[in-house]
Image (cartoon, rainbow, N blue to C red; front, side, top):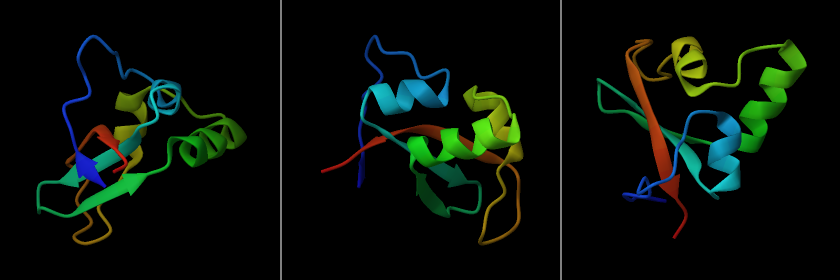
Length: 80
């Protein structure tokens, strides 16, 4: 995986936008830990649990597996 400026004119407001554009959800914690989430898996969990599919709502539920902090950022990442 690599980070890339894929924003351009594309909008990444919901988890479906990531799937539609072929991007993983790159999550970065303030401690420096990074992870990539599969948007299809995230959407399955959200739908099953009746949760909001917008990225700010998803980000608010995330917690760093390294330090436990909830101060994370989400953005697009593309596969090499």
